Amino acid sequence: MSLVQAQLERRGLVTASVSVMPGITTAIGVSRALIVPFGLGRPFGAPADRALQSSVLRALLNLCARTDVPVMESFSEADAVESP
Amino acid sequence: MQPDELPLWERALIATYRWRRVDPVPVARLGRPIAGCRVALVTTAGLVAPGQAPFDLARRGGDTSFRVLEATIPGADLRVVHRSDAFDRQAVERDVNVAYPIEPLGALAAAGVIGSVAPRHLSFMGSITAPGRLQRETAVAAADVLVADGVDIALLAPV
Image (cartoon, rainbow over all chains, first blue to last red; front, side):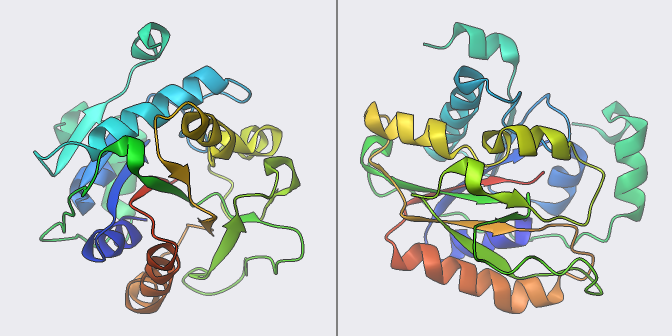
């Protein structure tokens, strides 16, 4: 996925990826990544939890506005509860 | 994050995973506020829309092709075709939004958080152990789709 992400950035698209394996993400190198505490297969959280899924999306969008890149940040469910 | 902070399973995976480092990391910049941006999703959940050919589960090195998912296709109509059993397939099959959050993305557009949802999104199968073909050909074709649709932001969800 990182190779696709890099190609998209080369073509002028701003990208951010969810990461469930931060060690791999760091080793490969991506422009913007959000480390999530969910299991493999559930990068946006629990099934049917639209609020949590939306919070992960918002966190990714916030990364897209960042200029201090490459950047990798952690997402927490506590943040999700507090977000509007 | 330091390597010794990682769980044992991930350290073992790093030691054996055939990854290819991106260096230097290319970086694009937003040309407009996020509230005016068109946003696309890219997933590796192996999602296939009705009528589309399934991914090739037996292809050596992995199937590097991708499927274009029209934004209008209900998530419940998508099926998972993936050769890996290392991820929570049941969660994806129960609610595709855990790996392809098309419904909450639409809600963000309706709320004005983003400008619009892209008309087309991309699905890969992942589990690609021979990334050369992906890098040379498929990634370029995938970018062509999103560039043609005027996408500003792509959010990627590896499973």
